[in-house]
Structure formats: C-alpha cells, structure tokens
Length: 102
Image 1 (cartoon, rainbow, N blue to C red):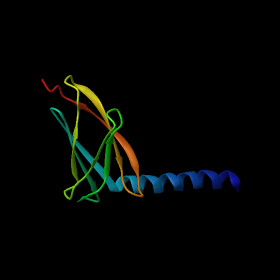
Image 2 (cartoon, rainbow, N blue to C red):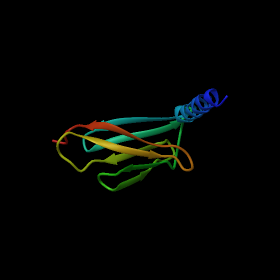
Image 3 (cartoon, rainbow, N blue to C red):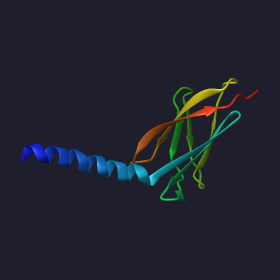
Image 4 (spheres, one colour):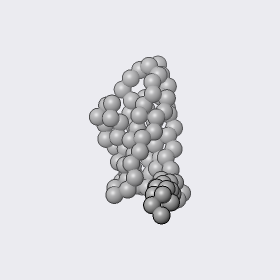
C-alpha cells in the first residue's frame, strides 16, 4: 500500500505545481541598457508583480499592462538573472542575454 501511495502523492504534488506554474507567463525582451519584462496570467497582464535583479539589488513592479523595464548597468553584453514574484503565489527566475549598450 505504502509503495504505491508515495509515488502517487509525489506525482499529484508535481502535477498541481506544474499547473499553477503554467498559469503565469513571462516574456523578456532584451534591449540595449536592459530588458522589458511582461507578466501575464492566463493571457491577462498582471500589475503589481515584483521583478528583481539580485546582482544589482534592483527592484521593480509591473504596471497595469503587466510590464516593467529592468535596467542593466553594464556596457558589455551579459546574462541577466531576473526574479519574478507573484504576491502570495509563485516565484521563479529567468535569464536573458542583454546586448552591449555600445
């Protein structure tokens, strides 16, 4: 009984986590000097979502259209890690290559 219960419990937990994760989508559009980040849930733009860049200790919040511009303070092309945190919900990180600002 226990041998089948644990795998079923783990599988159901992963299924619930995956379905919750699938609702929130993030689109990152790199540009010179930073990137536009847009957060949507089920196709609807999400305002007031926390967007942070840990390496720069920068914090942003999405506006009504679900977007925030994340600034990058480096001139050379580099990979930027962006954390997305929904209030009372999921949190995850995305990485994108930011082009050179030269």
